[in-house]
Length: 366
Length: 90
Image (cartoon, rainbow over all chains, first blue to last red; front, side):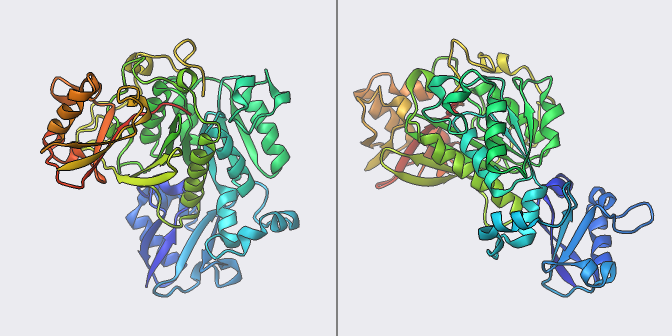
């Protein structure tokens, strides 16, 4: 029997980043054996030492948990959908408060109780708690994403508040990770926030990025953008990239192996050629629009619904109020994800870009 | 053969603040030459040593010309050219 199997974000590095895979079997355990055959590394997660389905994974057939059916012997039929949901901290049952909080999600076919559990089990990393990071953090927390990491070394400045809505006037001078974590705790106490209060560098990136399922880039400088791209590719994590300038924004979702930021922009502009938002300005609401699109992309990836902005670049022009997409693709000559990669580990990105990770005199954080 | 050319914010200082230009050219290369004739220095922002700079993309309609025939990509009446530089802001 051919069934579709939902792979949770935390296991997708084992399935070539696919949210759904096809598998055959007469029952759940048969499907698991086929998955093990197709994806040996995933197989190690699906059976414990006694060849049973581990207690750490809940399995649903068409949104019904198998312990309420026939367990591992639950039969499956052509066209059934089987979902693997890792059991997460805080228990597998939603509290009455959570049922109430997420009620508008729970009544949607595309989310429902199962989708809400996928959100709760997901770990998303936001690079930057600035203009783009603000709406990303607020909407992911509101949606019930269970674990949110925040990378930001900076403190809140009065000039940030024109657009960085996760921070408030009373937060001026505080670390952005603390300010953002407080905002999230006020909004949704069910969310676990992990604070990374340091600049992301080639030395620490691979200690952070592999711990998350999805990476959202809201960096304000090219050195960090290339670093995050490369680290996300090496860790086989989807990267939702967004960038802004004046009235314009760009968003895309890079699925590992399907193209990356270097395929789109092989090298950064020379320092000073492209002015920063600190030098040229940015419409305060612009990162709200672009960051909200990034949050939408992350939530779709977690749920496994719809079509991501994969191999498409969304262009937004606020001045004429126009959205359009253009096609982008993997470059076979890409030094990272091409056919013959020449960059196989993180490099010196400040030298590559001729500019520092935190722009300082070149450009203040956007 | 007029082609609509969309100018990104970072280059509008070179085009007198204009966001949309109408120009003619049989290829992308010729189009950029024609624009440069009116707005001196425009081409140098996009092209270096005869190649498209690696932090700028030029899209013909929905496709990146790097994956077509680069600067030699032919143009036809009614095409739209969008110039997209990498943006760093976040």
